Structures are given as C-alpha cells and as structure tokens.
Length: 226
Length: 219
Image 1 (cartoon, rainbow over the protein chains, first blue to last red):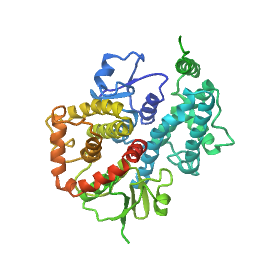
Image 2 (cartoon, chains in turn red, purple):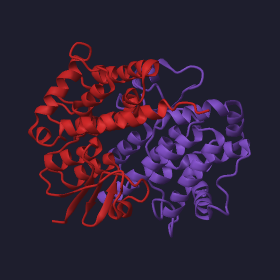
Image 3 (cartoon, rainbow over the protein chains, first blue to last red):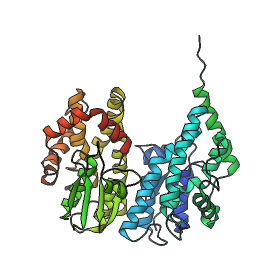
C-alpha cells in the first residue's frame, strides 16, 4: 500500500476532518504537525496555491483543501462508506457540505467582534444554525442518517471547537432548549469512539483561542495617536 | 411532463454551466426562465428554500441545488462524455480548481475596483500556470473546470470592458486568452452563451446588482 502522510495543525478543525475520515476507514498514515504560523518547506511545496493545512500526501501526490481531501478518501478507500450510494442523497450531502463551508465565516464572526457587532453576529449565526436544525438534520441521529458520514465530519467542529469558541468570546449560542436536535447531534457525535479518541486537548485549545481573540481585539481597539 | 427540468436564468453563468453539462450528455430537459431580479417563482422557492437561487435541477421530481453539486450529479447519473475524470487523484485536482475558481475569482468580481483588479490578477496568474501544454483545463476536451470557468469567458470580460478595466490582456495572460478562443469556438459552448449585445445591455443596467449577487452567491 502506498504511503499516506497528513500535514496538520493541532487547533485546526479542518485537520481533524481528515483524521476522522482516515481513522473511520482504518487507513494507516503518518501525521506531521505544522508549527503554524511558520510553514515548513514541505508544506509550501505540497500546497503552493494556498499554503495551508491540511494537506494529504498519498504515494507522494499532494491533495489540499479538507473537503476535496474527504472526497478523495471516500473514493480511494471505499470500505465503511461515508457518503450515501443514491445519487440524489449524495447530492443532498454535497449540498450541506457546501453550506457548511459557505457559512463557516458567519458562524465565527461573533469570535472576532464585541458589543453591538457581536450581538448582530450572534443573531446571524443563530439563523444559520436554525436552518441546520430544521432542514438538515431531520429526525435522524446523524446528518448522514443512522451512521456518521462526510456531512457530520464537515460539521464536526460544532461538536467541540464551537463551545470553546463560545467560552472564549463570552457567548452561549447552542443550548439544549433553542436547538434541541443539534444539541442531541453534538452529544451523539462526540460519543463515537473514533471521534472521542481524536479530539484536541480542551485546555490547549482554550489557551490558543484566548491568545487569538486578544490579538483580534487589540486590533479593533487601536488608540488614536496624536 | 418532462423528467428533467432546469430552473435557470439566461444571464447567469451558474445556470449556463448546467445547460452545457446537460447538452454534453445529450439529456432532454425543460428550461424554466426565472426572473431572478424581480420575482422568483413559487416553485423555485419551494425547491431551493435555503438559498432561493438558480440554478435548480429537478430530476424525477427531486430537486438538486448549487451548480457544482448539480454538475457532479449529472456526471454520475447520465452516460456520455465525462465531466469529471475517472481517476480519484485527477478528480481531486479538478475539485481543487473548481473550488479555487468559485471562491477566489467569483468573489473578486464583487469587490471594489482596485482591490478586485489586484486579486483577480493574482488568481488569474495561478490559473494561467495550470494551462501549460493543454488546450483546455480538462485536456483535449472540455471538463468540469472549463465548464465552471465559463464566467471568465463572458461574465468577466464584459464588465471589464464596461468599467474600462483591463485585467485579462493578451500580453499578461497569453494562455488564458488562447483558452478563451478555443472555448468560445467550441460548439457546445457557442450555443450556450447569451448574445453579447443582450448581455452587455443586461450588465449596463445591472452592474452593481450583478457584482453583489456574484460575490454573495458563489454557487
């Protein structure tokens, strides 16, 4: 079997998407932690266009962009399928994956804002989450149905990173009473052994997010010099 | 009743992508023109409740939304020339470039002029590089990246002319200009471009709205 390497970064939810997919399929791989913001020569060589993690290298050939990597993994290792077989259901899965990507900035704006701006950002985030609650989850345990799939993996960051982001930014958005289905999905997702065993350290993530938010806020409050 | 229906708009490059793909596969379909600026039909809103946008493909009564998602669906559902390659690694490369086009270039159309010009130039340079030794992004025949790049050939050039900006010049981008010639002369594309006069008139009336819509849609 050809060698599989994954270039990732500890706090990055995008790296974890790839880890989860590889582990769910039982694919052996070597993990290389990038020391961001410094980027290794290998990373720049493998992802010259975006210079970002994650990058999967299979048999020496690099693939960038977490969602592109997920589709590649699904097609290359068909055991334990993570996408539905039916063409229309597969299209619906891809629709929600794109939705997740498009709305990622909206769901994170409250982290970069304060006061009125933050209140507005929270409102916008709630609108997006309500769509997931009402239209994406249905009555299923997971977005993919009874078992976890690529859509769940794509939204996986909501199950762990989101509440750390909430805590750091001083906001509480997903609650058991306002988004019950999503709240339940978070619980179920985190109970999957592969997910449970492959999450970053909460303390380390909180520390990382705290520093990040401090930097962002210092830029908002630059005093006018005279 | 037609088995395949397409809710679209003749001024929309996203909608045109789907027509090209259906024609490539020889699929008969009914086209329903939506008045996207003034009044969207109740059916469109029913079939795309999340985004309320064109294009929407309806196949056997089931809707599929998002042009790139529809293109993948068409490739998987109907026989005929491939829109995506068969090899998983090559498919990953195509998906990478499709994402790049949709996220970087379409967005840059919505930005204000100087910033748009700089960003677009940077991204076009990267695209130019991928065309080395190839007639089309897909090789000898058009593929998904070419279909998705349709907006460069028309929807990018015309606003450029109207705004008097010159980004895609022959001197700076010889390969992309050559690609555009091949592309526009390719019969399946030629038959699926709106008349230049009509499109120019549409743009003159809608320049701002289009830029905002293109930036917001990214579909």
